[in-house]
Image (cartoon, rainbow, N blue to C red):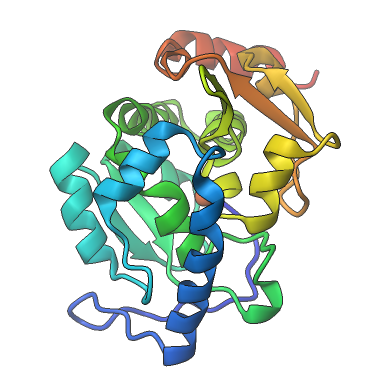
Length: 251
Ligand SMILES: [Fe+2]
């Protein structure tokens, strides 16, 4: 969910196939090789299990259709290629139908380490593994359903919750602090920074705190919210979310 893009998505052909250049596959291969060794001890178990299940190729950019096949076996979700920019309304509508919209371009080598826009590596490597997890898949769909039912006035509030969980969430586990947010897990810099640096603030997950805090899309995050347990996501009730968004609006 970003408002501007300097990247142009490669459109799919009539069969939905996106013909990437050799160099684009090379960027994926190098991103994958750099990121995978960082996951152990940093990404949560559920993500690592999901990555195993989704079996992304390490040497080439996969097509959304092949990822969808394994995803739908697990939870009924699909990934669909979209232009880099889609409206919040369309975004929530797709999530409500268990469809994850994926920006299809891949970053340039100049932005190899840090990218403020979601590219295909972020979308597929960062997001799809946890969408194989029933609890996480249900939470993602629920955000889409609430966004679709509640309408535009609630989209910014839901975007804050989405940002602090699905994009940049941390979770406490018996083995220690772990990342589950796709924005962290797909970023070489942010995965170590979010967990190991003394710079960012880490607060316990709190709905009202999240709804009151604006977020920045163009920096390593100064603040992360930490779940005690993934169940906290499903414990969020629609009525509480709607009331919370209303209560958090500036006067
Ligand atoms: Fe994302």
